[in-house]
Amino acid sequence: MPERFETTRWSVVLAAREGTGEPARRALAWLCEAYWHPVYAFIRRQGHEPDAAADLTQGYFTRLLEKDDLEDVRPELGKFRSFVVKSVQHFLSNERDRAHALKRGGRGAVLSLDALVAERRLALEPRDDSTPEAIFERRWALTLLERAMERLAQEAEEKGRREQLEQLKGFLTDAGPGPSYRAVAARLGVSDATVKVAVHRLRRRYGELLRAEIAETLGDPAEVDAEIRHLFSVLERRRPGRS
Image (cartoon, rainbow, N blue to C red; front, side):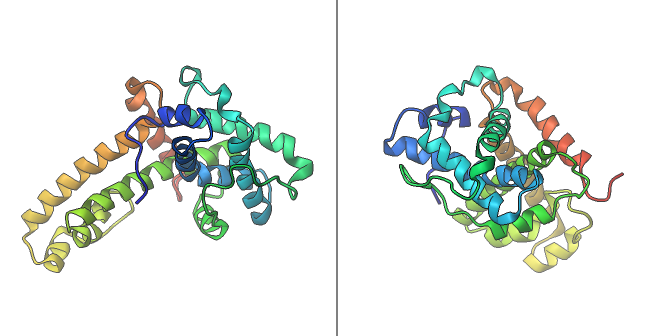
């Protein structure tokens, strides 16, 4: 697992502005990994085909590395995801005539891109997301949930409880009907009460990790609760099958 930055994501952004050293490069790599899928989904919803969208996404993050686009970023100017949307729009307007001739080199790409994975994720999005901004926000919200779950899985792995998490994680999300406590208890060879206690603890820890992920996207920790409400409103608004 890559080293985590025990700071807010805004602090990582500010660190990434500082120059060409290894800390700045790692900061940019971390930011690109976190935001690649939302940016790809945004560009695809603009009407670009998968290959072109992958090249444009690569080009956008390469530009962050090469053109000092982070120089104008300030936490007091708003949420980092808002900066990303505006900067991608600006990038696309400048790259429309050069989509297949993106410059590479300089400090180089910081992560391996997998357009097939991104396409599979995008295929799961509701088809009624009519704007690129809407699909970006949904993918941003899902990315935060995924990253919190990844951190929970890492902790379970370190404690030797990965199998337990695999059996119980269906109780942590609103993914529809799942197995009963009794069925899971039978598979794990424990009592129903033990499963209920474990689920309670996992839900609490998952919530803590989600709050931490959200806090990393904000300049002001006091905004976490409002951002959580916004995250779940985005997911609720575009949940498949809803009118």
